[in-house]
Image (tube, rainbow, N blue to C red; front, side, top):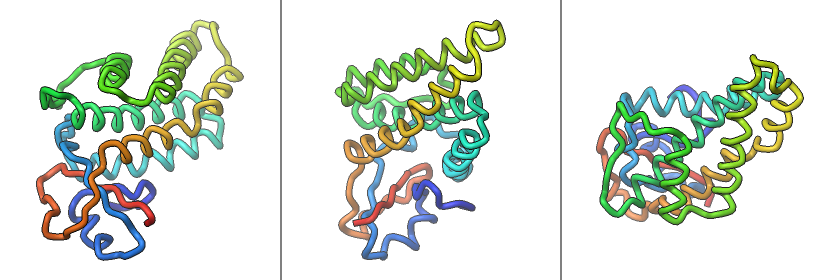
Length: 188
């Protein structure tokens, strides 16, 4: 992994950090079942997305910021969904489920209602703003307002999903090595 911005990684990335007493390592179960095509590339891209979104916001590239934010949030909603759905269903690599559908599915599985309300607001305002931008139905100021209002939503979703779905690794011998397994590390 070229960047450790997100501090999320696959097995090879986490091996070095697992022994660190200052970090709590969490397994995100079933994360390999969210439609990942290439696990290493997915983690690299996830890590890059955080920096790119910050740069986009700082440079007032609001459409890019909003697009990156939606992908980031969707990634973690999918992890929540595959972890919590009672039928143990998985998301296929070619899945074409709309973002609004995954929001509703996570809501039905008990995702925090306040966070869901914020995600729905972000989705509705971003959809209206982006799709109406070229037609003159919105402007840069509205894109800026949406971006600033929801700039920390990804952090909120990430923390919630990690807290709800992450399984603390207590015993190093229990670390799964399945391709696509995702771990998160956070300070103790």
